[in-house]
Length: 172
Image: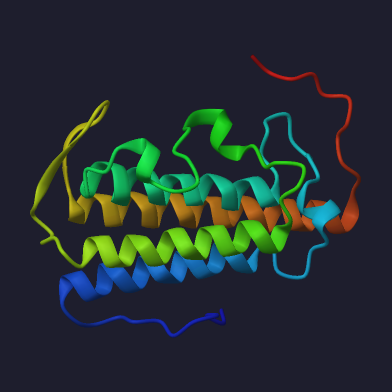
């Protein structure tokens, strides 16, 4: 297997956690590189999941976990919105793939800046999950982005060999 960014396998725990999250951020972006805006919007599954939607969702996750939960910012100050669930996959008609990649990269950079002010064991409260620490946030988003990069890989394969599903009714 060829890694798209250097694989860090040793070092302090925080460094490893940060590098793994950055690697999974990069891998998620790589799943859409080279797609056209139209291809990135293809719906090939019954859910709202699209390649561009995966990145939009990841940007929302960055803002929720780092800006809102960790830094304690009101949702209105998190830049770009924090609507979760299916809404986090919705991309505006005027947004391009380049726009959404840039949004995710800005959210990721802001997350790095926010996290730098906290220790791994600093505890914050998520409104539904309860008490969490920065270590948990790193692990959760690493897992989430790795899973979504896998989704993106599969969608990309489908895009290269299929057409989008257009007759799937909206799900409530």
